[in-house]
Structure formats: structure tokens, C-alpha cells
Image (cartoon, rainbow, N blue to C red; front, side, top):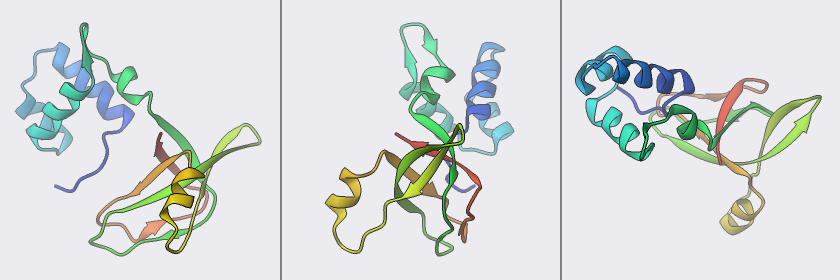
Length: 131
């Protein structure tokens, strides 16, 4: 199993299966995730009324990537991005810098995670931005 952020569809399924009484182990097996990951997802995003997938997804924006981003296989990369609206769609524009990390963080609206076993993300692909 590799680490990827939980998608909105997976959150919907976790909610549905939890309501149907499935165990964390069974939900993890169905989603190809560790039961501990399912447990953490539920704990992080539960309130007085239980697990709420919409509440969990609220800090994530789906946007198109404005340019190609390369990544080394075997390494998870985090890229600061600025969000722009173009023709009614959100676009994630990478905020790149050499060694001035503070500049990139100050000018960013969120973070794009490039998964561990990926060679990068192509321009125009939809990505999830953590805000």
C-alpha cells in the first residue's frame, strides 16, 4: 500500500460503510488502505454528530494544474501553489523558489502533494489542493 490522501469518493464510501456497520479492517481492505489510516481519517473528521465526509473535504479544492511538475519516483513532494480562477475553473499555479521557503509559503494558497510513486503531474490534470 502507498500513501495517498483520502479522496472525496473514499470519504463518501467510508461514511456509507460505517453506517452499514462495516469494521475498520473491512473498510481498509475494500479501499486498499491500512485500518489505522481509516481510523485516523474517522477520528480527525468526527464531531459530536459522528463522521462527516463533507466536513473532511472542506479543506480541499479540486483544480487544474497550470504547468507540468516533475518528481522523483520514491519521494513524496509537496508543492506550494497559488489558486487562480480562469474561465470559471480553479487553476493551481506552482509557487516555485530556490531557497526562499518563506516567500513560497507566504504567496501560496495551498499545497499540492505529488504521491510517492509518481513521476510528476502533467499540465491540465485535475489535482487536489490542501488549503
